[in-house]
Length: 215
Image 1 (cartoon, rainbow, N blue to C red):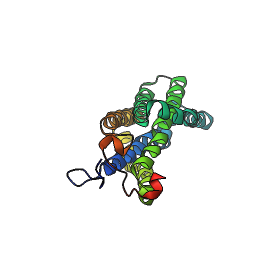
Image 2 (tube, rainbow, N blue to C red; image 1 turned 30 degrees about the vertical axis):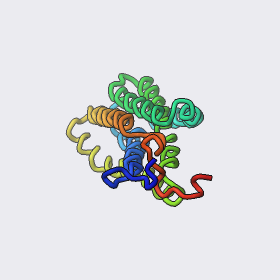
Image 3 (tube, one colour; image 1 turned 45 degrees about the horizontal axis):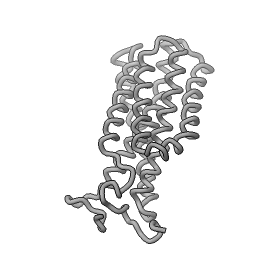
Image 4 (tube, rainbow, N blue to C red; image 1 turned 90 degrees about the vertical axis):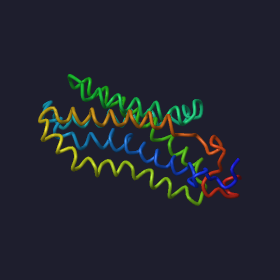
């Protein structure tokens, strides 16, 4: 094992894990959840949804996320966080794509619920991965950076979504879901390629590992 926890180029692989974790939050929360808030007015106008129907779609997503929260830890323990996170991102991305293709309200509700499941499966286990890769002195910093991925997505969607809506009219919200879903599936592939469950998988120690981390 490399006692210094360094790769040959001097970069600890834990920082790559942190970038991936930030992108997981970007896709799983920023696009899958916050993206709905940004697209909601356009969806209501095109589909004739009232506030009650729109609220139920948000609830469906949260219910899906809650279900994943209850089983996500057990799944990660059984199959490993990397697999669960990758599958979760794939589910979330596919569900967003299908939201754009949905022909009626019931279909959208189904896909919003499944997007919530995928979001929970990917977003929750990633923080366990960070805890393995970062010692106690850097763990808070790493978690804070990763969580910010969702906010970065929300900030980015603010100016970008209106451009798409203006360009494509009533199809704009569907085009946005295609983009959100496609990018999240790309993140699933990236996670499968780059994620590692623990530093030992790379022959490394955690960043800033100390005696407290070995206890």
